[in-house]
Amino acid sequence: MGSSTDSKLRAARLKAGIGQVELARRIGFSQAMISQLESGCRKTDSETMEIIAKELQCNVEDISVTGEPSILVQLIRNCKSLTYDQLRILNEVAIQFSKNKG
Image (cartoon, one colour):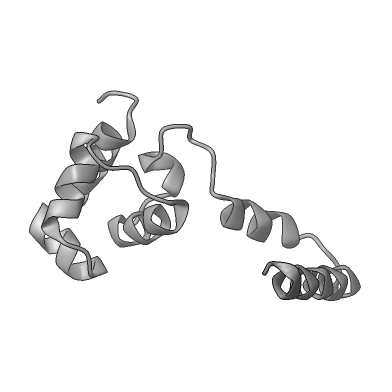
């Protein structure tokens, strides 16, 4: 297995015993997209990688090039040790950012 996303993704899919058509059906994407991701002809965002990893019952790190978790995964992991008050403040900041993103 190589170090690129395409070979890691294909290896994870094969390990799960799922064909391209079946994986595509389960996650609501086309078989062509899965093929393009596996061949390296197409790149995708972290949200799509999370969806694929969940379906393959593996971690995003198992199918990503860098092995670095997505920002959402990092945020969730970092929030686990926060107190209720810290989470409340973080939520307020997130709300302000989402209101100002336009």
